[in-house]
Length: 162
Image (cartoon, rainbow, N blue to C red; front, side, top):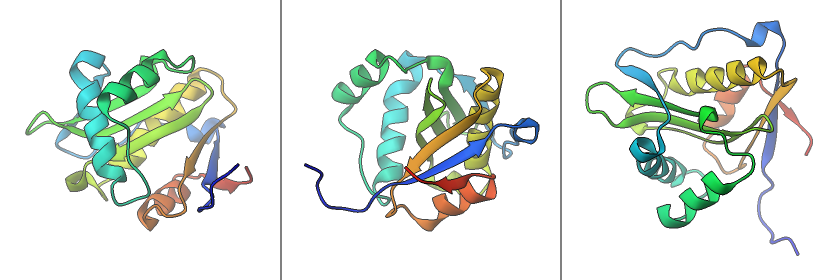
């Protein structure tokens, strides 16, 4: 039985030639390859902070991390980490499934509205285009702040059924 509540909204980006371009990072951040020992705990904390006002929370680290890395769709190459160069904290994080699905994306509060979310999504688009995926999907809670919906539309994602 399904509990009542808002239905998530599904967005899709078709990966044609126009979808592939270098991500544009704001000044003051740098990309790093995802290393679980270095990034997983901080990434989970950022996700929880980001989702606090937008429709949810992430389970405790002791539950979240084993579920994530044991999932058949987990690939550490599909975890994108952007670090704040001034303090070494995670400024943005996106975790995708191998099925060309963006499972989670979060940007630290002080880095919002600076293009970091769009850059993380571009990293995902590029990775999946390289893997020859025809499109990338994500779901967003309808209770998510309007900034997320605006971001997805501004980067060429369209709402789809499902």
